[in-house]
Image (tube, rainbow, N blue to C red; front, side, top):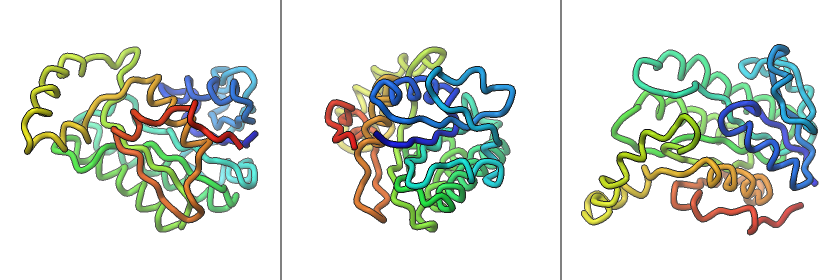
Amino acid sequence: MNDVFLTGGTGYMGGRLVPALLARGHRVHVLARAGSAGRIAPGAQPVIGSALDADSFAASVPAAATFVQLVGTPHPGPGKEAEFVRVDLTAARAGVEAARRARARHFVYVSVAQPAPVMRAYVDARAEGERAIREAGLTATILRPWYVLGPGHWWPVALLPLYGLARLVPSLTDGARRLGLVTLPRMVGALVYAVENPPPEGEARILDVPAIRRAHPAESRRS
């Protein structure tokens, strides 16, 4: 059984990940603002604080916990460049600092597929979050999905025929794989896998889209 500390635990991915972790016997601590604590899944331990301010929650991160950083701008898109810095990057840096202070044994970060031809401000913010993890020397798993299909997030399904065509063109095959789509259940499964299978100490492991699709909780070595 592991202690797992989450930011973004009431959001699109976190709201599904928390029950999945609880069902597998983990002790789950979820950071939330006071007004959002009621949205935390039953069985998880609420921690009141701001994901943008490490001082507000660092002392509540259990020693040697797995820290899962999920906070980000909802529905990222063009025109939200300032939010990517104010929210996504600030939260990533705060999470890294809190994990460093708590001597977390493993830091799990949802980044984004890169390089990418669009959404450059979003990619840049997430890449800076990855840099903060490496500079802190944290043992980490960095997941790089492009788009996670699920409730309210289905529009890219219309692009699937184009992905199929791109895979047939050698010069486009790598990009089609790297920028592929993953479903929300698959993403949650990959996060559970990451929590239960930390990399060697000091390593920052990358799970790209093909690796996210392969990862599955059934393959975990729960500790």
